[in-house]
Amino acid sequence: MAFVPTEEEAIPRDPAEGFAAVLALRQLADRLEASQVERAVREGWSYSEIAAALGVSRQAVHKKHAKRLRALGLKTGRGGNVRAVQP
Image 1 (cartoon, rainbow, N blue to C red):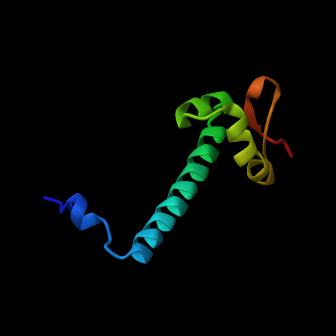
Image 2 (image 1 turned 90 degrees about the vertical axis):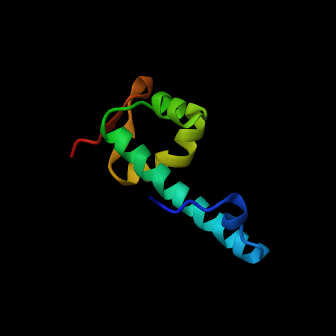
């Protein structure tokens, strides 16, 4: 059985250690979100669908990810559908 620490055991006593943990979790969450948005886009999800899954607005998803997705050769079409750019 896996070890699951109690809340008291999981929270660092030193604020510097706690903030380092918060930073590491935020960076991990950002990388996970970026990879899942890219995967969803490649599978044909619209910004509206991605936004609903993330609990944010379509505009928030576009603002955060559109530039990176375009750099990867992906773009949105009319109606919010996302597709690969044809060479």
